[in-house]
Length: 87
Image (cartoon, rainbow, N blue to C red; front, side, top):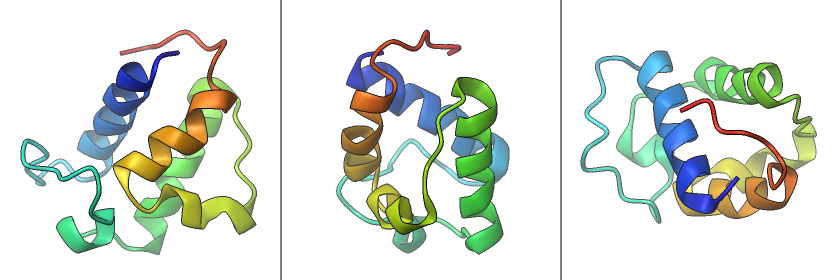
């Protein structure tokens, strides 16, 4: 999956987890938590959705890699290189 597709997948997951958030102005370099009302359970929902959709395992020690859209896409690109996008 290409980085643009991964970004689209993450946006889709975020829109389901936080349906009231406006994601159109999301800055890819700013932490999600500074831009959105996400708590730790919402963050775990993102991880669980990725596991459910793509069977990707993200160890707890790597959660920091998912802080911004840029870092999330960079982290997931090698893990999802052979995955098919559902978005």
